[in-house]
Length: 252
Image (cartoon, rainbow, N blue to C red):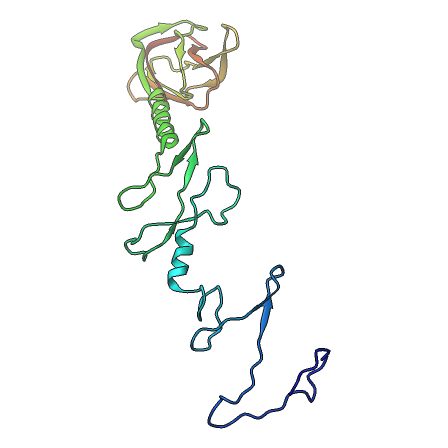
């Protein structure tokens, strides 16, 4: 049956006449495709009639060998690349625990000078990390603790006497902010407190005084703690005359 070159419809143009035991008498029709520039190209099949494609399966170029060639032909990523298209290279032929022929990408980090350095791993592939900032922070914390170590000292020996308005020598607190004074006196009405250094050289007395506790014999004991001191120096202040005095201080 001839086919009209002006054919626009297949209605009533093809007849079905399929033999049951052979396909030798069948008529054939060619199927073509176009790549958009080289005209019409016939579709190909392999010897078993499977359509050949470029993505695998069938005949033509989609063989295992050709696919391997395509993989190994990928190029190394250029330093100024803006895309990974066609830039990844095939990695090791056999990677333990990870199969063979894996693709690999090198990872780099930029240092503070702007240089690119490869990330470092140990023999097991674990990423190595240097904790410089943390180590520095730990060292700094230890140093601060050392600077804030407590100090104890005797300020007045046993039997000392003080007149009303007297003050002790200055006690430098440094980085410490707390002080405790302890001692004894034979004066039942003694008022012993703390004076704080101001912006100049003047020391300002606090209205708080140490409570006295009679020891049952002839002396009165006292202990007074002040915390969170903002001044750099303090003095022990005697509001009244004090006799039979012993005094120690502890800063922390």
